[in-house]
Length: 379
Image 1: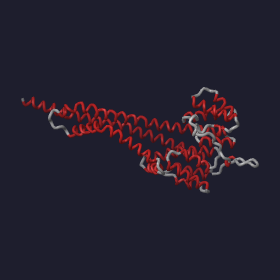
Image 2: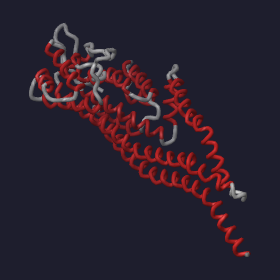
Image 3: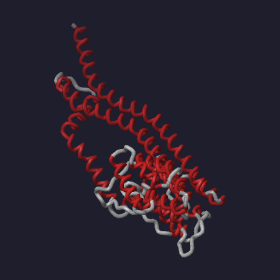
Image 4: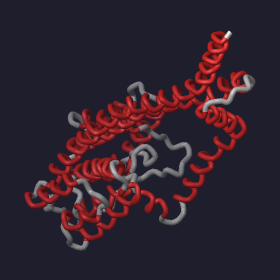
């Protein structure tokens, strides 16, 4: 892709070759931090005000407005740094604004297109927040439904079944197979509940410790991408993040290789992150993005097609943004479909398990009633 670059002044490096001053340090425990939604809102407010006043005045105006404690500290620190002569990218605390955000702002300042780039950055951050919110809301109800159903089942096995176990076994009559199975399961849960609780906790802790060693996390992430259904969903999720941020940075005027290098650390999947680093190295060596794109594990076909079209037409950034929008929509549609199928399936399965326990309790009672009726009839 050919990026339009302004000519450099005499004895001065062009903006795309200048070192980006990020400033700040995440090592400071007192450094203010922002949630993703607050960060997106703050960037949006800066973009709105920067269109009608200098960015230093915009930040000073925002610093005087009522806000949360974290936002107030961020704005005050930024305002002091701006008054001291620092550019916006260096003035923003690194604890509140990750490197990819600061790098995009630095490129916007250097190219003289800061208000435009702030608006595009706000769009990208708001889209990320919206996608995360939709995914969380889609998963919250099924997860709550499963927890409540499991709680009901465990409570029945721990309290209801044992309360009537003596009555069922004291009659001297042979119990149905289903009842014996449920009673045995209830006894096992009562004796081994601590072990049953410790096993998933220990497994989770072991998996967490294992994935922190060497490249185990990369292997785990690569394996997840190969799973049916789950792999495609994860690839689309990473594709949205990768293409949207890359499009924003290319719009800021950053060269493709540098934009890829800054985008790579933001990816959650280690396999995608490492592949993106390799793509950046190949692009820096002279390869095209579409030629290096197969290095991505299980890349969405739509993303591959639009990258090829974008490079051939010289409109890579707009088509990357289109890819992000289309993949985002596909993820939302897929999440709604899965949720629509999962809710009745969970209700049927968990309701069936509760029904089995109730049936196991009722069967011997019905048999006793039948036997008592037969005895009365014989008399």
